[in-house]
Amino acid sequence: MAALKFLSLATAAIFLLDTRANATENKAERVNCSVQMNAARDLVRFAELTAGENEGEKLPIDETSRALARTVAEYVESVCTALKGNAASAPKSATLDGTYAYAVQEGATADCEAAVEHWKAAFSNFNGLPPQYTEGTDNRQNISFISLFNPSENPKVDCAYFTCPAKKAGKQQQEVVEDDQEEGEEEETGGGNSNGNGPGQGSGSETTTDKEVKALVCVTTPKALNKDAAPYTQAQWDQITAGLNKSAAPALPTFLGFVATAVCILLL
Image 1 (cartoon, rainbow, N blue to C red):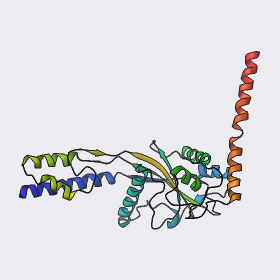
Image 2: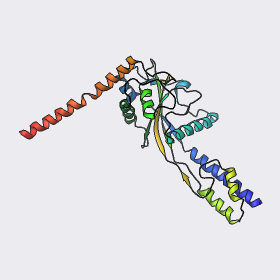
Image 3: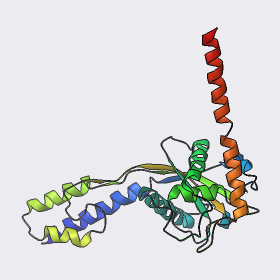
Image 4: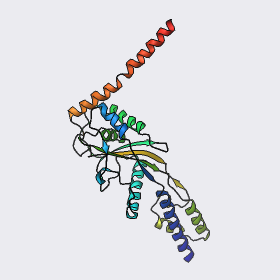
């Protein structure tokens, strides 16, 4: 029985170390996407975004002290969890209340231009003036669009590139549990379950792996989405509509001009 208890504790300890080791691999590096975001905002004649400087305008990812390191790690972990779960909004921070824009990417570094184009593309999702906002009823791309085109008079922006590796847990744990099973103790399964609150720990017989996610996350403040309030006035939406439609219009004449030139060359 003593051997069983020791092995059960070892199983739990190794599992905890495995998951913590993976959690520390989550990273968030601040990037500057204001140039690309402001280029899009210029199209609709919205005020320029400036870099957030105060605590309530920046993502809480700065480890300025050892005491803050744990808080930062927990916040980055919560964002990674939201990204992997395809959540529409990032977890709220005690110091930051803004509107978030997300773009899942694959590169080693952020691609601000690609992200902005992805967010702009959500324009086609709206059939007229966006309605009053209700939490949990919108999708990530639509919210990202509103974050990009935050209508505030003096908007701030802060961005970071999150790298969220796939968590793996079970190989070391599995080896210990198998040794435990060789002791012939029937309580082994129950002991494993009593310690388990993580993926794959109940059976102790499989390695559990989730997906890796990399994403550019930006937050604009003050927040543009407020419960039971529309994000834009009709005048602001008309401004967005006119600007984005105008920016897309020249593409067709240019293409037709190219075709006409090609036809003329063929007829010569």
